Image (tube, rainbow, N blue to C red; front, side, top):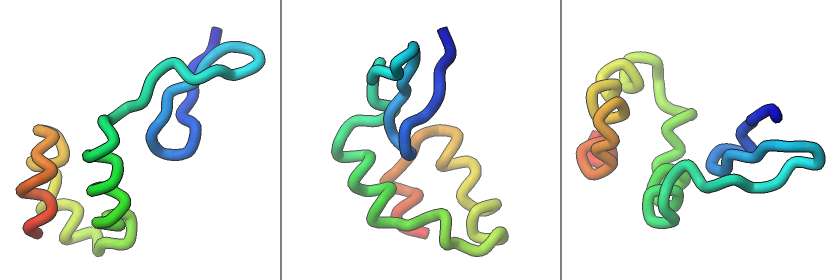
Length: 63
């Protein structure tokens, strides 16, 4: 069985692929989508790495 990410937030596996679980809860997914962090500059992403690694969405949203 292989695993892959469906979109950004769901882990799927198998043939045919079926949802295994979401990577984050719905509140976290909504906040990450609102932040649009993928549009941030490299410098801002580098500054955010400690918050990303610790899963601290509150501090991440204050950057």
